[in-house]
Length: 275
Image 1 (cartoon, rainbow, N blue to C red):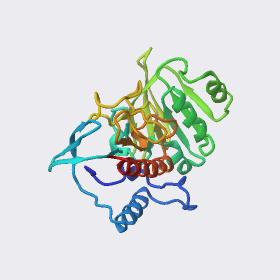
Image 2: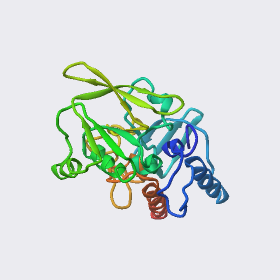
Image 3: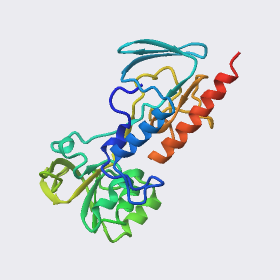
């Protein structure tokens, strides 16, 4: 069941270059379309329904949708996560046109160009360091005067000659037409505004799990992601989770695919062993 189009965040990626089997890359839309057609060839029934409520218990699982209620013995949760946005002018309009939330997906597009990274935690610094492989200069924008990332990552960042730091700064606007041309910054201490000319803006201020349907029903980690065991089963037997909704280290298409396979196999095994 999918409330919009199958694929989620992948559909926002112009070119996927880190998925096995496509050495020249493939658009996110085409990759999802191929997966969808292949799954349908094996009999998968994709329904355009929005799930509005889940009632999860070991013996009964009800799925309430905008078009009726279903009862099932096993369930795989793949509701994903949503990158936190800056919620500033130009962000939505330029998403996919210079604004990105995935350096490993879009970094190669910015070879020999200047980019900005917003954030100061481990993920932001790791992604900024990754971008130095391609960009001519990476500007790290952080609202504080020191990074929150681990000391080892900080040392790597400070020793990287391509890295520049905009301290005590928050973005107020992203400018450009039809693509990103600059980002406007405000110094939180002085209130001064400045403009940084960049071709790309990468936002890494965290992810919010799409966990509204399972809060209070499944065990979650401190950030709200669903906890699973090695078989991808959640705290409720017969309920499995795969992809970005899971509590895990890496969120990429390849990991989601592998987890989908594991969760499907585990769900099948669960049904076979039911009394």
